[in-house]
Length: 432
Image (cartoon, rainbow, N blue to C red; front, top):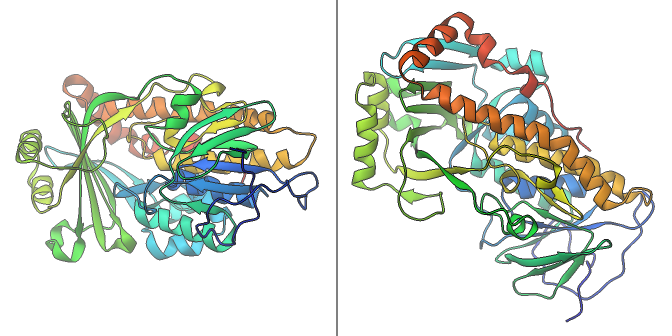
């Protein structure tokens, strides 16, 4: 079957069937319009679609699910990420659904004692030019989807998993379910932890289990006892475990995640497993010795879900971000443990960096593989640093014995200085 090239497609990202072959068009920036396929319609994939469309590319996005939906619950977004979203004109949309906590506090899980505190709110805005916020993953994905639909002509395809691809020096040939082979100028793998694009591109095996298991739950704050409601971020540190709580959905809901060390059983897919009685027993055992406030909070919650955490070693080089005309983004490139609260943030940063690099590829003087290498060079070391710091944070969060004692002393003496991260919050890609 002959390969399909992009047609102009319907506006505002509406689903469209594959069309016939059409020639490349001439862009307003000169040269040919470049055409990309994105695999994956999560936060990273939609952010990439928005960034690349803003950069002047024609984009087609393929998502394997029947609807754009996001698993998980809340996420934290530092100023480095919020600046990117504001640069895309999403400040008002974020304000409608996010929460802007005034502080992050760290407490001892056993005693409940405050160990350290980091001012957020206006302090972050003054220091880094953007706020620190918390938001439900589904709300963030929904506002990115609206931006793609309302402000770009990205073509969105549901229930169309990408099956295979091949590339030459001149093009990428992509095969997705339910249609002919597609010819494009670049393929972006934003298909998450179990990325099929990565497996075909690098063939470096599946992510590994970390030995850490997360339990998550959410509660409508109005249904909780007043003493358990909160509009701040609180991290509770205990031996071989920690708990994070913060508000989402404009403050109406409280998101709680407890992460414990212990191998999960069952399927490899880490997301959305129901919690059994034995799982709850495991969580209860971990909480033995915790303070009354923490135990009361976790006992007040229902609808628990669990997932086994997986990751990869920190990135080793540019080839783990891009090879030829194929690039990886977000968890497909650099899955990381959640101990720095930057997984979604790094995917959004990747998307901004990708859009900035590929804007230059509209100029015939700069070819696509060269610009994808520039993207990889600009991103891999930062992502590797975040991955490594998240690993280290996990060891510190779950410390016991003398290491735990030393951690607590350091937090009491140097709390704000240790919790603030200028190297992370003060840097972000240029937004095209």
